[in-house]
Amino acid sequence: MNGLFQTEFAGKRPYAEWVKALGGRQLPKPKRVFDSSKVTDHHAIIPTGIPPKGLTDAEHNVFDLIARRFIAAFYPDCKFSITTVLGMVDEVEFKASGKEILDLGWRAVTAPTSPEEDDVKSPEATTAGRQAGKSPSASGKSGEALLPAFVKGESGPHAPTLTEKQTTPPKHYTEASLLRAMETAGKLVDDDTLRAALKENGIGRPSSRAGIIETLFKRHYIRRKKKNLEATETGIALIDTIHEKLLTSAELTGIWEKKLRDIEHGKYDAAQFIDELKVQITNIVYDVLADNSNRKIIQQEADS
Image (cartoon, rainbow, N blue to C red; front, side, top):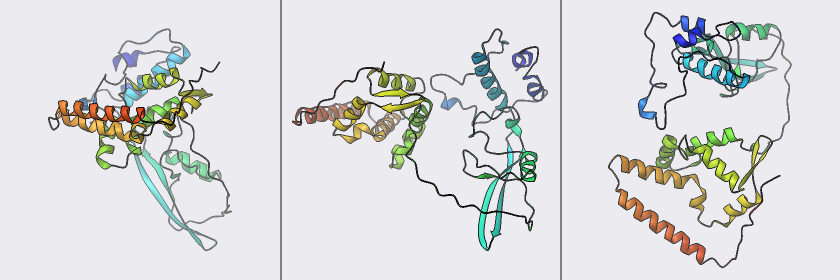
């Protein structure tokens, strides 16, 4: 904290006031932030305490994000109220609900960097927006509208609109969203026990997930198209060729993670786990050898 207090950029100390506000009292360590039982490969990336010098613009942005998150971890909760409005327009009842910040708490430190983080506004901002005749915008994360304080019984002019839209296919993964999907792969599994196992571990480890994606690139199973990731013909053909659908699902990882967790807690025998794997792999190999469909996967060359 002292190092952050002394950090200067362009003659200014951007973190001094936030650190100063924490002085003179014991820093809280909430369980949701400080939990040694959840630490695997390494703890969170945090400032070292040495004020940085000579950073590029990109390095400065990364350091600023880490520093703000670190300081915010010691700030109090953000307090907000949920507003629910029951109204009537042209004899049609409607209901609207949204959030309104009462105390910024940690949000005073972490300036919004994405729509997901900016899902609530202060009373001053939302009230000013309403007085200017602007409609509250939808929040990114909760799907709730951002509403200012309402007084029961108030009324005003309103011009209802009806918008006709069409559904769109799911968005392609980006590398960032694919990493998040691997971390939360349990959402794809129906079995409660397996979903719980994946919730704790996901697919891969935090240190190995980026390497898994890189392997998909090297084997030409996926390719980049601008920021998006798309499956190549080779990747699609590979999935279509595999008859054992368990191999292409997140459930297999869930099953293995569940058994490995049971082994860790002494509820399952490691030798039995290995024997079961041998049987499973043997059956899969025999099924492939017995397949007379003569299907082939054409290796795709890398894009130029």
